[in-house]
Structures are given as C-alpha cells and as structure tokens.
Image 1 (cartoon, rainbow, N blue to C red):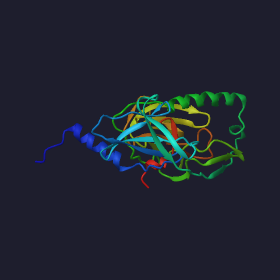
Image 2 (image 1 turned 90 degrees about the horizontal axis):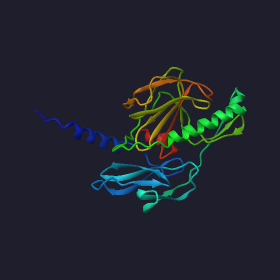
Image 3 (image 1 turned 90 degrees about the vertical axis):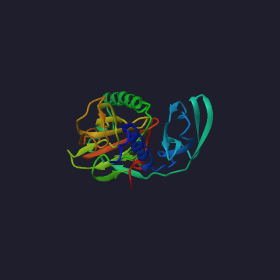
Image 4 (image 1 turned 135 degrees about the vertical axis):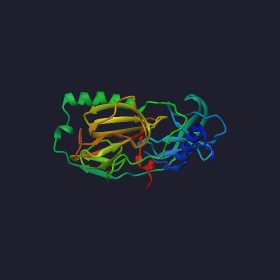
Length: 273
C-alpha cells in the first residue's frame, strides 16, 4: 500500500501548486507587478509600498512580492522598500508600463443616483471611509491562493479600469469586473478566506467583503441576498449570496472588486483565460 503523505505536507504541496498555477502579472496602472526577492529557503521577507504591507508568497522556489499598482500611477519607476518597516530596509524598484483604459457610457433612469441629495452625499462620504478602512485590512497568512474561480456564471459586461460616464457626467473609473447574470443566480467566493464584513451601501448595494489573506480582499456587490456572516470561513467556490441589482445598478449583475495592498486591481489577472 502506498504510504499516505502527512496532512501538513499535503497541504503545503497543494498550496504551492495553487500559488504557481495562476496569476498573470501585468505591471501597469491597476495591474499586479511581481518582484523577485530571492530563494524561499530564507525567511519570508517584508515589503512595503509607502506605508502599506505588500503580499509576499513562495512561487517556484522563490519569494515574490505581489504588488497592487494604483490606477493613478504614472508610467515609470515605482519605489518600494524591503525591510522591517516602511522606513527601514532596502529600496526596491518596479517598472510600471503605461496603459490606456476605454470609456464606458451608462444611462441611469434614477437621476438621484447621479446628482446626489445632501443627505445621500453625507451617506456616501461615510460609506467611502468605511470601505477605505476595510480595503486596508491586513491578515498575515503563510500562503495566498492566487488561482481564482469566476464568482458567477455570465457574460463579462464591464471591465476593470473603464473611464465611466453616468448620464453624460464623468465619474470614477470602474473599480472591478461586472458579470451579467439573472437575478437570483448564485454568487460564490473566488478564493478561500474569511468574511470580513457585510453591508448595504448607496452605490454598491448589498455587499460582501472576503479576506483572502495578506491584503488580498474580494468585494462582491449589488447582491440580491447575502448568505454568509462576518467572521465565517469559506472555501474556494463557496456560495455567498445571489446576483441582484441593489445600489446604483442598470440591471442584475455581479460587480466584483479585488483589492491588493489597499488598492483596486484588475480581477481578470487572477482568472484562467
């Protein structure tokens, strides 16, 4: 009889395989850059982008930093630091290439979702600060699974980074990936993790935050229903709710935002083509 692998060793092998399986680095604004930090026989290093910690994972026998690049980053050299704190250690440099995102024009029947009342402006401001704090959450984990599954079945109807115009008025670029699907269709978590928060927002509607580890956070928006609770642990592909059209939405769809070191990045980089 073939001897069984110890459970811990089996888990390590599965995690290593997953890490090497998928992430298509693209060092552009809104993309994910990768920096080689040396063999993973050494202790895992720490890397910082300004004051924010950066995910460091073992891939193909090497330590690699996975750097979420802010969408407003100009082309050129992006400075990071490897060391015990943002102020101490070795300076690193990541080359960022330019990228032009297309424009997207949307028509909303509810004009109150474009031209906000004072009450809704105040609500949106409060929610913005809450969402910003959640996106900066950090949970240290030895492994990060970067081989994601698409969180809903449907047509990709809105790509990340598109310059958006609502009723002809310019608004912030699209912060995630839209998947058109019928109301009530299942929504699943793209990778394993812990439910960080659930909420109902003015723009995002019913939303679920899932913490995938080391600053990699998924946000699932416009849900019709939520079937998980804060603090709940989820396996990859676990059902978290159903597709809806809550918040500012032109129809039933899932809006999926992916955050890395506090900044929105293109979710398609984590999905098998």
